[in-house]
Image 1: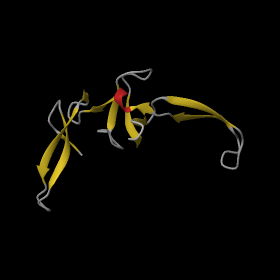
Image 2 (image 1 turned 180 degrees about the vertical axis):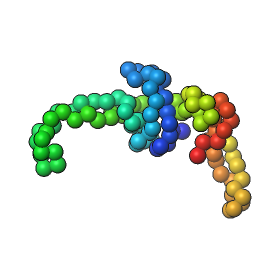
Image 3 (image 1 turned 90 degrees about the horizontal axis):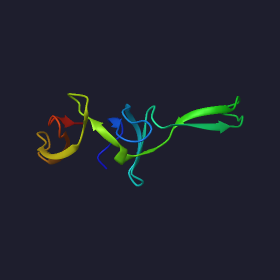
Image 4 (image 1 turned 135 degrees about the vertical axis):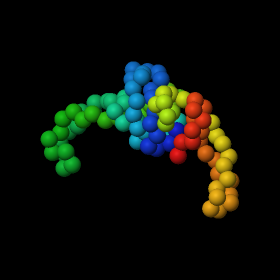
Length: 108
């Protein structure tokens, strides 16, 4: 799975198509992600110690990772991701870096 926590992504299909947000949580086993402000669901809750008022809570639900694309750091447009092997100067080891296909810029 190429999408990681704190990445900025755009939804490319579904009810929230075209919206952008930050990835809050990633579930690689299920190939799903939770994005801030996307796929909001309402949950009716009874009063409890934690929430004495009860009522209707709004919460983000997960969305399939195939329905989102990374945003390019330069142009802020959706882009595909590639991988590039780079040499780390400090340790001398090879590392794998994520690279934007649109601009060629590295994504941390």
